[in-house]
Amino acid sequence: MPVAPALLTVATLLGASVLSAQSDGARLRARALGVAPGVFAPGAYNAITDVSGVRVGHATVRAGDSLRTGVTVVVPHGGDVYRTRVPAAIHVGNGFGKLLGVTQVRELGELETPIALTCTLCIWQVGDALAQSMLERSENRSVRSINPVVGETNDGGLNAIRTRPGIGDALRAALSSADTGPVAEGSVGAGTGTSMFGWKGGMGTSSRQLPAGAGGHTVGVLVQGNFGGVLQVMGAPVGRELGRFAFQRLVQPRSDGPGDAQAERGDGSIMIVVATDAPLGERNLERVAARAIMGLARTGSSASNGSGDYVIAFSTAESVRRGTGTATVAGEELGNEQMSAVFQAVVEATEEAIYNALFMATTEQGRAGRVEAIDLDAVRGVLRKYGAGR
Image (tube, rainbow, N blue to C red; front, side, top):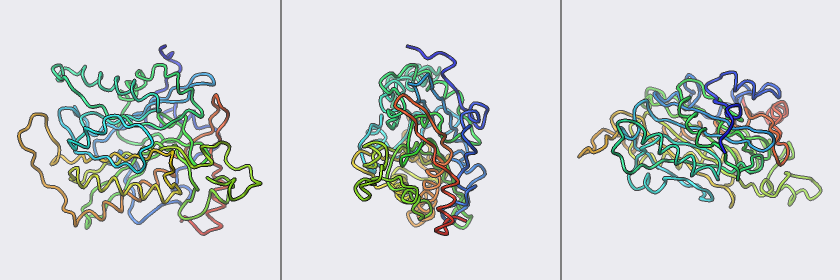
């Protein structure tokens, strides 16, 4: 059944629809709490959209006490991604999940559609809608094959995940709203129904600007956070101090611990999207994607058995883009000796994007109960206790 118009909220930039969703106290990004991982500075927006040309769009689906889901898209550039493809790579930290389009990206080393993120049981509808939206473009009227790339996490704790009404409409809305500039975070788009470390999770983003001596390139990361573990922030044991962490009932038998078996095991998933304007081919992009898992680990994830941890990395550099039907692919790429600063940047940006997803998320009431946003004052207290942050 289609979603009634009132149930589909397009969240663009920092518009009223986003602000109204974040009403349970002031939510703050990590840097407002003094949490600034690493040594490199962020870009102007501290977002994946600091990589020139990259656009992000969200569409949120809410209805009654049952639907808490949505779609988020990342568009690599302003042209037709099918006609002008970008090199890309995928790294699987733990493969408990579904990633539509993975084999062709690995085989050819390129993206030919935007990247969409959504709920576990929504990926096929979203993939169909994404393919259809590309096929409808006049320049693609003779296209007979297309490889939509759609990632997912399971928001079934808050969302009636088997229902899936109108999720294709949400994909189209997210695409039409995709823009450069600030990116909405927290309980929005594909992060509407997600949870992290036993608290409400969501979408988060961050970026790093490399110094001129390291190439001056920009690296941006966007995450869909829905995983568990033992939360640590800049090394401070926040999850342990706040009494909510994986395996709590095993080490503190008299504690209530996390509220469900999935949280107790640290299960869940995360999708990580990395963009850079550094001229990289798929081989070094796969190396970049692998480093994002290091940023994930810094936040306290151990990639549990039931956690699907995926990274998609792409380069927007004009010199490495690929037109359809071209006989040769030429372009200068960074050499291996120039990669270390890029690796450092992606680790830092991934860590901060995850903190932003957690700190910006808002309390959500769903069909299975209520998932509280993390108490930022309590986080401040733990950071002060351990001398963490800045």
